[in-house]
Structure formats: structure tokens, C-alpha cells
Image (cartoon, rainbow, N blue to C red; front, side):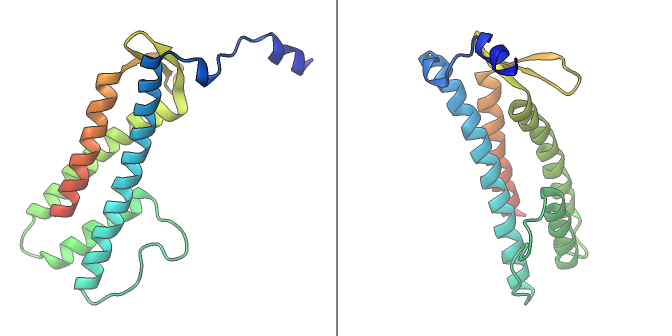
Length: 155
């Protein structure tokens, strides 16, 4: 019976999407890649700070640490480095807020993607509310991730 239900559904293969839909799907992939690059930038920054402090351990030698743990470690190391200058910690807090906002957006896209729609696609959030996401919104968030990576390296 379960197979029959699946066969009755009309599923559109990804290869059948129109060219404008392919651009949206490509942008979703770019968002995921930009997030991964941000994680790698953060790990590299922590590695540089560790090396400057004489610690040669690698970041997350056993398991890959979460973004929250990496940010906590960055905040701790910067606080030890700049004991009298709180401006770097203020910048880290601002970066962390931006990252949390983008992470919520990223989770909406990855977990809630429904289908391409006019000028974008539809998603469903955790409350099952349908949300329209435009390609422009996606491009803005991808650019924001690139800016955040640059801000992290500057701290």
C-alpha cells in the first residue's frame, strides 16, 4: 500500500526544473558552501590565535566542534589577548548575532524547502508556516556570510 501511495504522487525530478529554478537551487548550494567556508575561517582564526599564544593543538582534534563552541573559544582567546580592549569582544558579539540570524535562515532553507515558486521558492518553518524566500534574499545572506568571514579574520 505504501508503494502505491508513492506511485500516485506526482514528483518532479530536479532535472525537470526550469533554468530560473536551477539558479535558485544553485544559490541554495552556495549558501551551504558559504556557511562551511565561514566555519573553516573561524577554525583558521582560532588556529592562528592558538599558535600566537604558543599552543599548537588543532581545533577539534577528536570531534568537530559546533559553531557555538568555536565562538566561545574565540571569545575566550581574544579576551586573554586583549585584556584592556573590549572593542574586539564587542565585534565578536555583533558577529555572533549576525551568524545566529543567518543560521536560522539557513536552517529554514535546508529543513523547510518545499518547491520553487515565482521569483524564489517556498519553505515551511518549524510552526509549519509557509514562507516565500526570494533569490535576492538568498544572495544577500550569502554575501553576509562572506562579510562575516572577513570580519572574523580582522578580529
